[in-house]
Length: 495
Image (cartoon, rainbow, N blue to C red):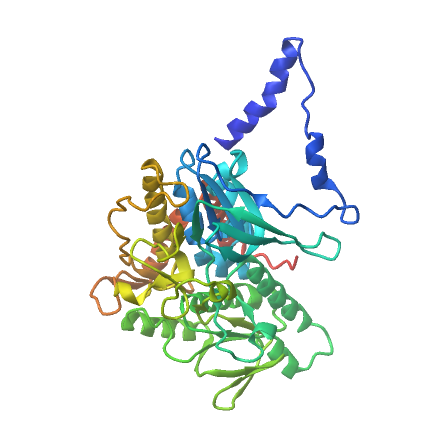
């Protein structure tokens, strides 16, 4: 247990003291002091990075990204065979199925964020394994190098610097970016719901609008605009956020903001049917439930996004105070710029073993990749369960390669890789608010299978995701947050 390890560490100095040979522990050696220089005194960091490994060293696996795919791979990799280096702009994994709940205070933000050091402890303890807070700027596949740039924030911090990391095996798990379809104004005025800081921004904006609308001098028209929450995109994320928001309005806003309760409402805009991948019966149920909860469903396409309103393709103006954009994902800028084979849709092309063909020792998993046309397989959906399954498979494959002596660069050419990756869909779930949810256990839209809706589905939804949260620590957080919200209501502090 973690607390027992800490107790052991704390007790060790007292054991030395009892023998009469106690030496005060040295917290930091002089060679580490350069990490604590101020921004004004800082010396430009070295630009070399990690050099290539030797044959006598453990081979190095470099993972780009800390999403579902990359973190599942790091969790499963055998660190007695490999050193693991993770390069990512965030030091945690986000449990995305519960992210919408944090926007309205059902869950705390830390409940859905799992530090990478807990997912793979070797990164924090092993001498050859590291986590680098950085973006990947380019690949040199000929020399087995990743070109990175450190991430710094704020005017008083150091300027970002470049460095290189040599790899024996490279796993690209950099994810995807939200699709804007080239619509003007989306990036400037809408908020996406993919990261913890997005949820924090949504929460602050929502509570700010609630408080501003209660201030004297605000006209009724402006109150309606401020308190109009518009969600674009009728997929699982958009529907779940709309459901959480309607719950928040009915159970908390009506009680604690009674002066403006009649002004706040939610609109969900979707070009086609909501939850298009679900069973038809479930989609009808979701539509009725959302409408019953006060969510207005609009079928239309957004043509333009302006600071205070969006314009639909039929010319309709929709004023908004909060705009959340959830219309799916597409290839990231990094993926588009890489000189690697591409699958249909612009993702990195892979074969049946998740390798990038014609590029030795490079693999790709998660939303950033898709099957090449030559494989005859269709691109898998951008789902967490797809990414997690690919990460698990590739960890087992790399462990097999490492045990066979093929861990170092350019040394696995003749190895037998075994069975290719096969994905089987386990089903889809989505909550629609008011203790109601949908569970669709069919393997595909055309297949037959179990599909249920209502309170029982909501219980299954919560139970399933509680067991899928990465650590026991966060499972405890989530369970306590749910209990606290049920008993006392949601927290409405704007922090």
